[in-house]
Figure 1 (cartoon, rainbow, N blue to C red):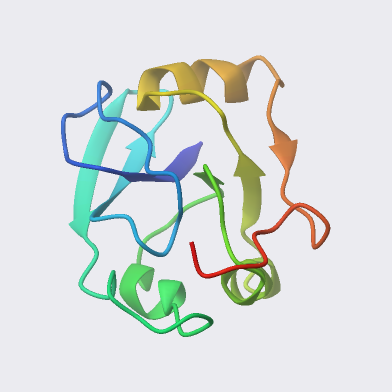
Figure 2 (figure 1 turned 90 degrees about the horizontal axis):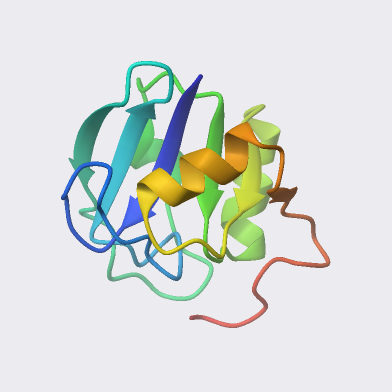
Amino acid sequence: MRVCIPVESDEGLKSRVCAHFGSAPVFLIVDAEKSVCKPIANTNAQHAHGMCQPLALLSGEKMDAIVVGGIGMGALMKLTAAGIKVYRTGQPTVQATLDALRDGKLEPVTSDTACSHGH
């Protein structure tokens, strides 16, 4: 499984999960089986509310899911329309998030649990 996780900085599996998808400085594409991480700098981190362009930035990356601390409704709709599963994590690191995902402890983000503000 390939998972995208927004992080504060690239420290591999020790990276701290960013609180909000669109504002993350870096996205890690993680091959969960091999524990291999590929960082992608978020060149769209500074954007107006509702103007996050995750698919443009992550285009060409094969991923099965995105795991976030928080995500706005616009980005959630774009990702789910593209067939990408979106889960919420409260875990502090990429490794802890992957463990929780493998153990089935993460809930999908829904329109009721998406962020309604620009943070």
